[in-house]
Image (cartoon, rainbow, N blue to C red; front, top):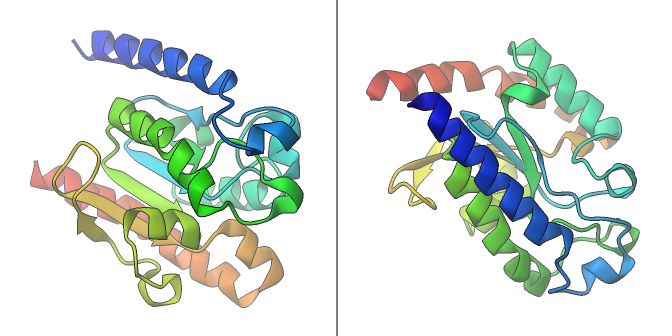
Length: 200
């Protein structure tokens, strides 16, 4: 039964990827090289959601492949995970010009794709990377106040989705003091996951 569910998830994700590949619904596709759909396991228990693709991601078509991505990989290894064990996506699927922040209408236009990804995967934890991803799911919260703290809120497929706000890995590249904060927060993830699974 589980393998059948995985096969259905793969098929649904492939169909969604095909839609994103030809998407022209907002201005971002005009300047981006290609869409950055997301990568990882369709049955991941943890889903990481960043803000938007950067230059390296735009060129490769995969999220978090630059310096911030290397740091994310390092942190995943510290908690016994690889990229293939989780799912990594962004709030918007095309790179904003000059790495500017995605605009509200761009986020709104792209959000249905992200919602569908979440519905297919049904992650136990959504780890938000940076303030844009945090504010999309938990509006009004400040990342400096809530990082590393699990929050339950109504989600896409669950009334009690668990969100885990994290600083964006890129922030540690510019502010070394955040590096240990991010690592410390990330180390809480396996414990949180174990607690959630014990509730079932």
